[in-house]
Length: 255
Length: 343
Image 1 (tube, helix red, strand yellow):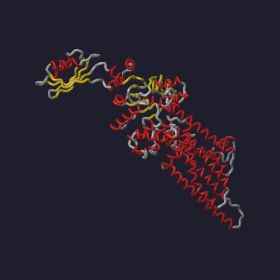
Image 2 (cartoon, helix red, strand yellow):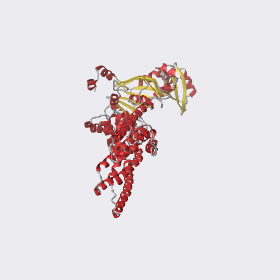
Image 3 (cartoon, one colour):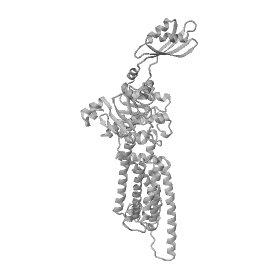
């Protein structure tokens, strides 16, 4: 456990020692802020209109601002993940520092978990930028807290899952660009899979739909915490980290 | 060290550990198509400095990587401190300090930060880390750069940080892959001295393709070529054993007038035991020659007598013993069969 935290701390330090962490946080904050601005502006406009026309249409901050915004955030996460995970192990392989880690008395799985945890922590920090905006809604409005928390949990789980896949991809190459590119491709594919089922509900589409990472986020974004989705994400994380450790081992046998 | 080992290891292992720190039996490492290391066996005693010598691509790095548990052996048994690299890699790793060919440094870290991190992952208790880090900083003369970013250090300093990293947990065995490559002569001397200072309580294996380095800092040499062990012995023995014939360089000057070079050459060729006389230089009445003896003959005294008896002055006479360099070339370029014969 101590070793996992050590690696995680080291990973975070190197993220924050380089511009990556700040760049990602700034970009995400900017994009999310823009989305937030438009969504809120429109919401305010509609609510004025509704009042003037005397309609009793229910306006809901949760449904009309937070939910679409966090859904938007889950899409941006697809772009963030490769940038966070690409360097994890590929860079250590390129610079040779992997030799230090693999010849130290720590287990492979501790290295992998530490690195993955570091990446997830950075992801949470980046995601944290959106809380600035969401906090404003709580300051001037009365949204429900619980669905927001569930949605954030969903975002973190989805990110953690994609990062685990990214960690695996980073193990297979010594070239960061390749690792990032492939991870991005895989993220995109997992996202596109949900399109496949838009107008079809045969058994094949159900399977594809289940694999798509984005569909499992939908329940979270509605504020529904379903065991099925949590289990899906957790098992994906477990599976990805497991094959990462296998890949790490094969690294020794092959290279 | 042995005392606390005895707590969890039986006495037999402890005994073995004392005598042979490293034991390699029939180590073979195959990659997909090539055999990098082919059936190598050797032992290293506690406290020895052993030089690992071979041309580039001979399998030095691969052997070291097996010893450090970075790569598993394809065949053979490798134990460090009595622990097998395959069965208990964690125990082996605790006892080994390793400096790979390129020092494994994180450029975004400060020296002290980096050493602390390495100390932590090597399992030093948190209470001791600061003390150990300060100690290695002192030992490797890193005091001036302790708060600098590693990425901004010069090559010499980086190499020293690499060595500091390898010794921070006070390992029994130190494995250094070309520790002096890319350093300037002054730095090389410093590192050599550092290694000598460390050799007392550490067993050191260092690889190099620079021969003078082995002659100066190692007690034993293991020469490998094309994945095969070619020779292993002490430096002195190796030189003696392979120096069958004696080579002598001498400078002759005439006391009066100019001696005829061919006359000198002719005279020396008649000395008993001489196989060949080579004219090197003839300038201002000084003639430099190189004389080789027949196998196992000592000819220096005879040569001197012959020169003096002919009425010439003998300005210089010295043995040009075969250097390790010659031996190395002889061993690594000869046919495999002959190499076997040398052993």
